[in-house]
Length: 263
Image (cartoon, rainbow, N blue to C red; front, side, top):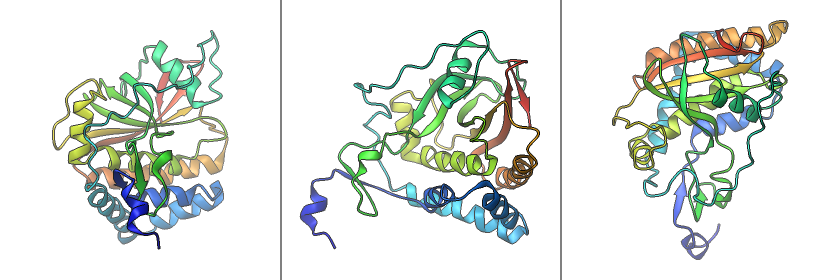
């Protein structure tokens, strides 16, 4: 056990919730295993409610975190430039998809993101330590693929983007719920407002739109379609359980249509 002098050099402790641990756990497994996990959760209402309970407990756990004064991005942040958008978008990675979204006006009736920011880690904290004893240097690295304002629902949106080879819907659902938990506590909403993260003011009980966004979803993959269907089933239950979740939406960006397709 480390003594107090080790911890005293850190300004703040960052909670690691059960939802965050589950998200990290899923990283270890392939889509076959994840399909079985999603089927098992959906096998009965009690099992679905156990999953909802993980979300509730994670929100309570993360509510102790308070870092209102610090912005989500450093003023000296040196992030890679987004790639240019060519006449035929390739969608090889998340950055190319975001570049496309920033340049194009999507026509999808169910989703219209504006004021887009990328790779925002809600846990970013200077001189911090995670509650498992690891230095918090990784806080602020990576994070939610996309945060934006959804003009259709008129609500803040947290999104995860999946490209070919990285299109596991259940993993993306767990990711986006994890980020929702970490953005939606009282102190984090106050932080969002203080630093104008979404370009609009959020209410203390703000509802969020959660989006899983695919770039050219592989409609020929039976496994990915099965995972998508299990994920949508679980998402429907979650929408009904949490007042701060306005909707969870699964959409595809088709290169040929340059539009959102509701999955």
